[in-house]
Amino acid sequence: MSTDAVIEARGLRRSFGDVHALQGVDLVAPAGSVLGVLGPNGAGKTTAVRILTTLLPPDGGSATVAGLDVVKDAQELRSKIGLAGQYAAVDEYLTGKENLEMVGRLYHLSPAESRSRAKELLEEFDLVDAGGRTAGTYSGGMRRRLDLAAALVMRPPVLFLDEPTTGLDPRSRNSLWQTIEDRVADGTTVLLTTQYLEEADRLADRIAVIDHGQVIAEGTSDELKAKVGGERLDLVLEDEAQAAAATEALAPLADGEPAVDGASLSTPLRQGSGGVVAAVRRLDDAGVGVTDIAVRRPTLDDAFLTLTGRPAEEASTDGEEPA
Amino acid sequence: MSSLRWTVSDTLVLAMRQLRRIPRQPDLLIGYTIQPVMFVLLFRYVFGGAIATPGFDNYASYLMPGIIVQSIAFGGFVTALAIADDMNKGLIGRFRSLPMSRIAVLSGRAFADIALNALQLVVLIGIGLVVGFGFGTDVLKVLLGILLLLGLGFAFSWVFCLIGLLSGSAETSNAIGFTVIFPLTFASGAFVQPSTMPDGLRQFAEANPFTTLVDATRHLWIGGEAAPANSDVWMSIVWIVAITVVASFLAVRRYRSLAG
Image 1 (cartoon, one colour):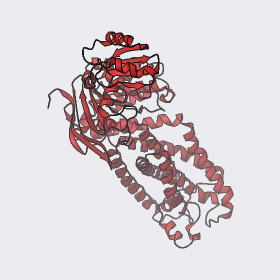
Image 2: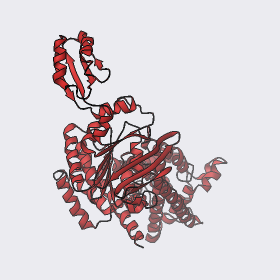
Image 3: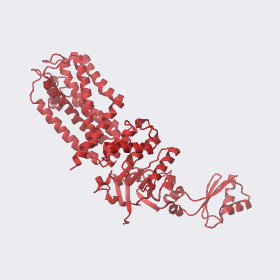
Image 4: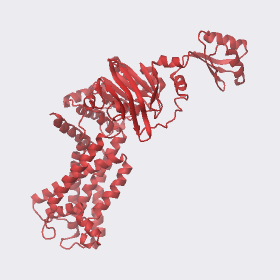
């Protein structure tokens, strides 16, 4: 076992009746890093977070967070972690300020400390004006910010974020990402679950891809992308009927069969093939007209497709975990 | 040990949470006040004329202790709905992830319910006095009766905490509450004298703890030959303590083992 791992899970197993939500999951996050747990709905992400935050005992395996066992040292561990969930867990009949003060008191801060901490967090999360309104009147983005603020009341060294931006509009998502990045810059260790490849790509140092309760790949974003091969060439044809001609013209550059979808064509490129310049020359020589052409690095979408055999969006939900 | 201190502190924080919510939920306040008043009017004036209660001044005197016991027992309903709502919204998950007492979410709720029940008592006693109910004993006994009813409310808060935790949804809480507790309160001496009921039902009503509670309240508030002491007051205390102990034990155990 590595000595500086703040989150370390070994062989975690958990079933709900016939549903095997986790089937031997290993997760490691060194101090100050962000571990992204990426997977479709029902993959077991939330179950893993529940076990690591002491809400649920594992059926098998073991886990430590900040050096404390999630089962044996549960009560002590709870003072070291913050949890923000996909359901913005705030009391909608309390104001933003009252919510944060209540959480402070329940972390056993004094009334005065709870008040000053609530004030700081409202400022930090741009909720000063809304602080006196009940959370029921907040927009989705504001509730998530309040939820995240509540998780940060104790400045916990370890932060668990269970799909923090699911259902948010792009602007709210961006501002939440920025907040999370600020925390990481301050040295907080973060475990983040997400179904958004873009989110894992932006925030996570290392990514564990989880599917059907098992980690099917683990590594940095770049390492995962490398598993899918090198760069890809995407192009849009002037005329759909020329797809075959284009495929033939690009064959010497390609590393595998292209994916054709109407006028769009995407093909993996062989290393050192000359990239877009070579491609344009060959297509020109073959008399194939293109309206758009670009070389791109593979995305995590491509990685997910390769690893699981299906796109992330269409992933099955047969391992659905109870709410 | 400081853990007792934190249990008290956490309970107070969560009781305060509930008390703050009360004035912000006007619909809930209507349920707590208007509904029982309608029940009083219904029984007093629609059914009351056809119900004989020998020994009592009028039906209002017989009815009020019964309807108050029923309303107090039922007040806990809101507790089950609120606990189920907290679970669905992830709040219980948040509380369980905090280094706080494992009983405080429930005990805070149960203590805050005392305030709601006191409010309900004031409204019901008020309407009772308007429709012809009158106290026939001394202040001490009236206050003892009120304490007994608040104790009953406290015990039923735990019962409904358990129902809320077990059902996990407002709909299921409703179903459990209505199919179990509603008949229990009617198959008692709350509204009519059990001696008028057929065999089987009569014995059930006489043994029903709701009858014991109602008779104890009648003794403490009305007294006289119509409402003798018997063992009802003591037995009521025994019932209240027993229900509280069993329901709180089961509710806390359930809370600890929740999956979320």
